[in-house]
Length: 220
Ligand code: AP5
Image (tube, rainbow, N blue to C red):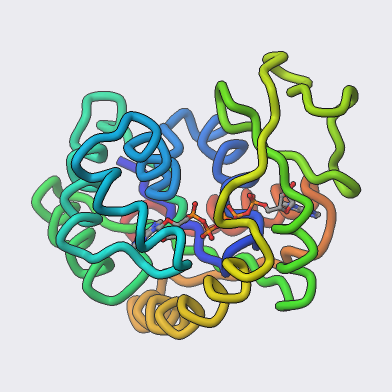
């Protein structure tokens, strides 16, 4: 089982890179933000509870988040591993993940921080467009679709996330960067932390990530 955790501030490019990396590694891309947005869209109990936290730019409580992630990680398609995007977001989540992986004779093989300065994060999030069908990610200037409002890959309509409004972007950055620092320290202490420059092009970030992920022998 290969488990890679992508870390980074909101807008650092975790979702963009996790999708590519997961395909290369042949494992699913599991994003707690995507799971929550699907739950909100389907109006499930988890979605109704998570929606208020997400709209304020706050982390959803661990009591909801950890169970949801572990349930997804326990499904058959994740038996060979996963690229995790947006989880863990604090020490408690990191500990719960370790506990679940140890029970399966596995561990987090690599946690890679995608580093991007704060002013660039705001520019990225406010210009982001996402496809309704598969979540493919675009940026109106840096990575525009060939046809406005339409996904290049599957032809579905593009939309902007509710939490990408300027005031919610500011709240997300203010509320979540402290906890991100704790998770970075957690993986540094375990000797599995790497980092890449997230300000270069998408293919260049991918190349640096692949180098980080393949540099560490499994189980090291
Ligand atoms: P989540 O969906 O995880 O959002 P996030 O962490 O804020 O991250 P984003 O998805 O906004 O950004 P990203 O790093 O994936 O960047 P992207 O690739 O899209 O979480 C949403 C909410 O759910 C949270 O606020 C919280 O409420 C809740 N939640 C989720 N997980 C939780 C957890 N574990 N615990 C508690 N609560 C949780 O890229 C951004 C933009 O930049 C795009 O437009 C893209 O095209 C562009 N871009 C990407 N790479 C580059 C590049 N190299 N150069 C130029 N542009 C680039």
